Image 1: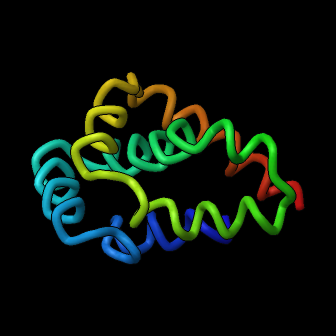
Image 2: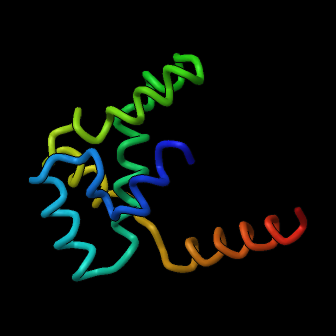
Length: 103
């Protein structure tokens, strides 16, 4: 959450190029919050090989720099190819709520 919380709390404004922000916000306003999850997953997917081979500290650095290191068009193409259903988001939310209530 050290890297992703900024992506979610600022709806991809923080550390993303303006051209990406405009396109993400256009989709966000038209279709809702799913685009933010898709963008996060696309950044993970685009950096997958590097993330799997680095230490925790390096992973955090990669993820902090990832938004500004990816072309807007590439990021959005990958993000929009990720299928994400509302039910999946609700299931994840329910799981998180149940785990946080047990702590």
